[in-house]
Each structure stands twice: as C-alpha cells, then as structure tokens.
Image (cartoon, rainbow, N blue to C red; front, side, top):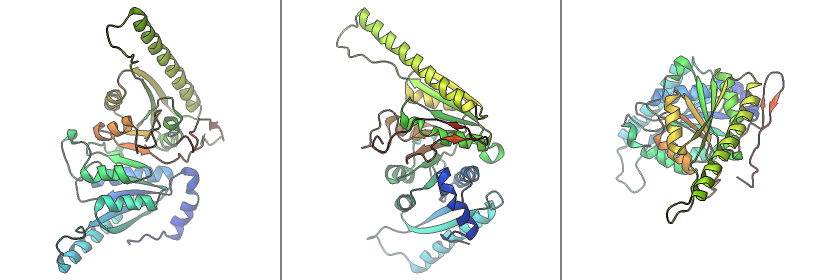
Length: 339
C-alpha cells in the first residue's frame, strides 16, 4: 500500500527513534540501474538504526510552460510509477518489515530536495547516477542538484558499490581532522559498526606544510617546515590512538592510520585499498565554512570516491556511544554557534 501515513506499529517505533537520530530512511527510487543497490543500502541502514524505510518515487512531469502532455499518456505513466514502487515494497518486505512507499509528482531533484526540507530528521539515500556511466563522470545531474540544495544527511550509493545484502558492512572508514565537526560523526559510525559487526577504520591525513616562498627556501625555513610536519603527525597519532582506545573498550574492532600526503587523493586511495564498504564523514571539517554546503574535502570525495558515502550535515544526534553495560565514549561536539 502506498501511503505517507505510518502504521500504528511504525508510529510506535518512530516515537523512540530520536535517541538514535533519524526518524526514517528514505530511498529515492529512479528508473536507472542502481535502484536495487540504493534500496539494499537503505535497508541495511534502516535495520541497523531500527527505523522505518520509505521508498520515494518521483513521477516526473513536464516543467510549467512546456507543451501540455496527453492526459491518457500522463495517466498511464502515473499508474506505472505507482505500480513500480508497489512491486518494490513487496519484493523487499522480507528484508525490512517497516517498509512503505510514496509517489510525488514534479521534477526529480526539486521534489527530493523539497522532501528533505520538509523532513529534516530523515536520512536520504540516492544513487550517484540514474544509470550506469563511466566512473570518472562524477555525480549525475539530478544527484548534483540534490547535493547542492537538499538539507540534512545524505547517503550516496555509486553503481560500483558492493553487494551489501550478502556481506553487510564489513569495514567503515571515518576520516578525521581533529575538528569537532569531523569527530561528531563518530558515535553514529560506532553504533552502525556495532549493529553490522563491522571494523572501524579511523584515518587522519596530515597535509604537507606550506610556507610562503618568493625565492629559494633557506635552511631555517626547511627545518621549520619539517618540524611543523613532525609535530602535526605526532599530535594526529596521539589523537587517533586516544579515540581508538576509548572505542575499543566498547567491543569494537578499531584501527587507526595517520598519513602525510594530500588529503583528498589519500582518502580516495585508502578507501579503495582497504576495500571499505562505507565512508562516514561530516559535511564540514576544520574549516567549518558555513557559507558553503560542504567542505572542500567532502565535495571532492562526493564526485571521486567509488564507495558508498554517508555525509552528515545536521547536528549529530548521538551525544555519546553507550553499550549494553552503560559505558559511554566521551567526545567533543561543535556548539550550535560554531556550526
């Protein structure tokens, strides 16, 4: 049944969800090849968080001002859109008991963005492309518009994503740069890792130190640059070791890695080398530019990384990770003013 009204059972589950952050996972369904991958990743997240799953299908209509479309053709396509999501609900119901569907009419990117604005506590899942394309094409047009305009958190699923149904999430990559913004996603990642029995890989990439040069560098300048690089690497190592130790106390398998290289290309490379199943990161890191929807590193990874990527934009709902024994992992969080 296609509805946007939650059943009594779903409503009861939704009432207790705010402690876990998201009230629902929304999988945006198109007509291209990655539909099944998008749904399966959305199911994995919905089941791990204990929240309902909604399949959202946009029935694309012509923009205002274009030639009127034939009413019969419009009705046929509308029925086909409803029939598609109805069939998908039945196909995947055995994997996710709390699954519903909704069809909205309009332009795809606009309607998905409007939905995200009206439902700020829901996690939106969509494919990087509506169909199979070369890996170096970046994001598809619809996805790019949603990324630019939709608020809230997004999970981007590329066509190259692994089959999460068969293996689940085995390894989660969490890039950290020492900032409160980047660190604030860690409790969520830990909860997901615990639910999926996955390994956490914490990575801090120390960028090369840069000195203003208008001529040949003097020996004192070179020494200063090297000292600063060693200092940054040492502080990053201590920082990750501290987080790794605290997270391991909760029964999680955690590895930490510090690299000294270009941040963006290094994260793309390590995600591929480590066979990462999911990247979890904040929309902003140490720069914290609030006049931009995403930081430079996150923006680069969105169009270059080949693994599913969960970008958290809202204030993280997990204030601390709590295990069955009641222990908590204390973390730093950015204040609302800072964000």
